[in-house]
Amino acid sequence: MPHPKVIGYLRVSPKIEDIDHRIEAMKNITQKLLFIEKGVRGHVPLDERPQFQLAISQINTGDTLLIWWMTDFGLGFKLAYDVITDLLSKGITVKTHHQNLCFKPNDDQTDALLRLIKGYEEIETFQRLMAAELGRRKLKDNKGEWDDKFRGRRANHELHKSIAKLLLTDRTLQAIADETGSSISTVKRVKSKLQRKAEISSMEISHRKRDRRHDRHTHHIRQTELEQVTRKISALEASKKYKEYK
Image (cartoon, rainbow, N blue to C red; front, top):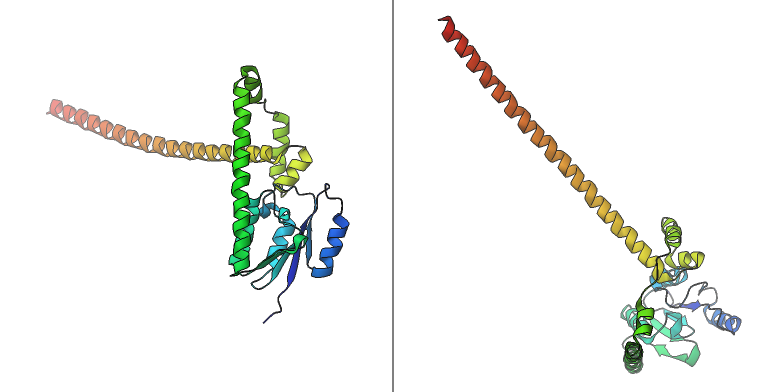
């Protein structure tokens, strides 16, 4: 049976002042099994992070995933809760270097920690929704500000063309956003539009093929009917000539 491993995952951000200290501290524990995510923002999904995917591919049941803090997974308690519970269900332990928290499968202390995170998640969601609602109420009192806030922006067609070209490459959505200076949501909107256009184009081609088949079938029926009518006329004319001959 293989010996349990400790695999580290650390997301590097320019805002972190002591990043060298964090890397050194985690390397002392994980040795060579430390996967450092660079140039990736906190809101980028984990399935779009190359280093996280490499880390997960190396980890097995009984192993431990070491992170600096839960923000390495992303922003907000909900994501941290979802990722930790998913790893626990696979028999993987999750440890944080900061505050030295340990989440173990089938463990009472872990269950208590998860309930605490779940509570913070619910409060965080409530506060965010309440702040948004208060902001809307304030704007509604001033129609000019409301119209200015929600009138929307004109689409940057040149930017969208650049994003569309890059979507045809093997770059990640975040890499495209960074290269074009746009947000990840803009890249996703352009991708969604391209997918819809591709679906519509496919449907139109399918309809045209069906129409052509229908036209060929109709033409064949009309041609057959014409031939039948022609034969009947020829037969009638032949019968008429025969009677006149007699």
